[in-house]
Every structure is written in C-alpha cells, then in structure tokens.
Image 1 (cartoon, rainbow, N blue to C red):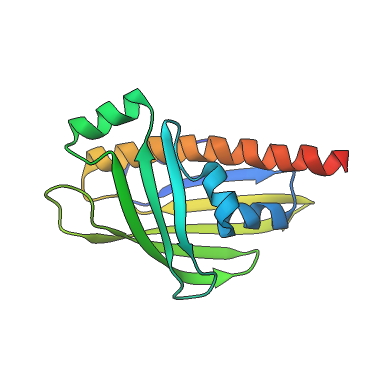
Image 2 (cartoon, rainbow, N blue to C red):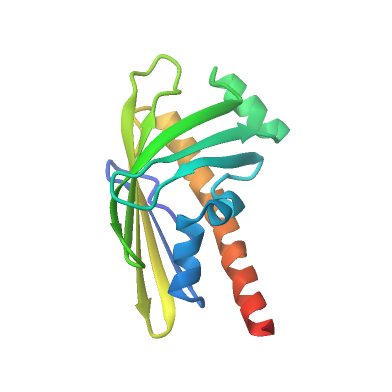
Length: 171
C-alpha cells in the first residue's frame, strides 16, 4: 500500500499499515526527535524549530536541500535551497488524528496559501493503520514534487518504525 493518488483534483493520499505500537507512530509525528528522523525527503534535512502539542500550537521547521539533485531541482524552480516553514496544529486527537496547516509563503511568484496535512491512525488487529492526506498545491509541478517528497518521507518513516520495533524486540 505504498501508493499515492497522483491524478485528479482530490487530495494526495497515502496509506500504510505497521506492525508497531500506536505510541511509536504517534511519537514520530509529535516529537522533535521523531520528526527530524523522517520528515525531510531524501537529499533534504529538516530542523524542527517549534512544536507545541496543542490545537493552535506552532509547528515550524527549516528544510534544507543537502543533496546535489535536490539543490539542482530547487534552483530550476527558482526556489531557495533552505526554506523556513511555519505551521500550526489545527486538530489533534491523541493517537488518532493530527491536522497541520502550513503557510506556504516560499514559492516564488505565488501568493502565500494554506496547505493542510492530515494524519489519521487506528489500531486494527494489533497493527497500526495510518492514512496521510495532503492538499494539492496550486501549481501542478509543485504538487508533483510534493508527491515525490512525501513518498520519500514515508519511506524514511517506514524505516524509523522498523528500527523502533527491532529495538523493542531486543529489550
């Protein structure tokens, strides 16, 4: 289930099922350490600068291109190599739902706009089902980049969950 809806006007949607605890999945979304482990796509680095776990709380980060391919991609779009992104938690139900609204104010020539990501989690038969839904961007090329980025990020999320499960089995 490692696919994204690439066509159409609806949101971008990813679904995963993990042999993991809901606490581990939640922690990767709600801790500075967890987010910094996976929230940047390959070739990028993220530093979480604010994370207030409450509705209305800040979620701010700095995303930097560190890989040659990513640096070139951003240069081709006339985008900076480093972007400061501000957001806030607009919905939070512990171990169930987290909606984050980012202020997309770093796209050249594009008026700032809100961008929502919603993660929904549920425990089913001892496994955690996670559904990530993200808005499309006004620019199809940026949407395409977002799908590639989220796919890469979720591959890192998968590895982070697997590492936690392996560590727990050893304890």
